[in-house]
Image (cartoon, rainbow over all chains, first blue to last red; front, side):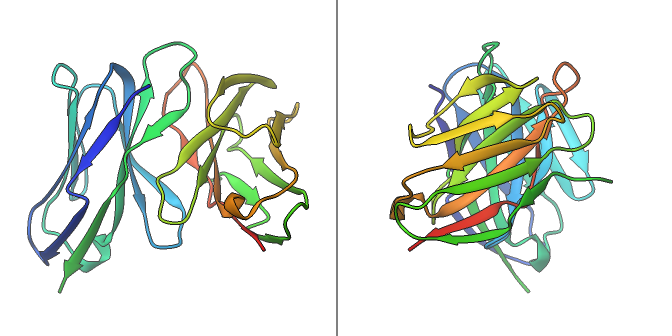
Length: 111
Length: 113
């Protein structure tokens, strides 16, 4: 069973700061998701990565398959970025279809 | 763009009752996943279906069953409800063979009293 670890668990920063959230996993994967969840709200998929780097607006996600590590970066952070960010891994086996989730990073951006 | 639809959005049941949650995937998505997120917990994978067949199984209790229908919608049936079943239940869908990316529904919040 894959273990997905995220750090930090909680992060408070000032508006405009550069944010980095880290995710590591224990066994090989076929894909890694970065998800955003607002309090009491649904889950929004930000990125799905299997290699390299992706960028969408102020968000950047990278993955290093050899090191079993991924990072989510937020540039020019804004209070509306405050949310829980979750990484979730899909196993590499053909039948391993469900995602294993990290415990999330609670991000608060203060004005 | 069409998204994953879940119904109902909120459900209150008493202990030992049954509940049925429904998930309507994005059109042309053939694979459906169910996840359970307890209060303050990370989501846990329950079960998935592809072409009406179970494709993967996670930590789904024996009291729960699920199925996928010919129009690809899925239903999660929960019997003998317990207080610990109170959670947010997410459904996600994708197109198998095209992408691993899963698209999540808004969730059904089940409260068992």
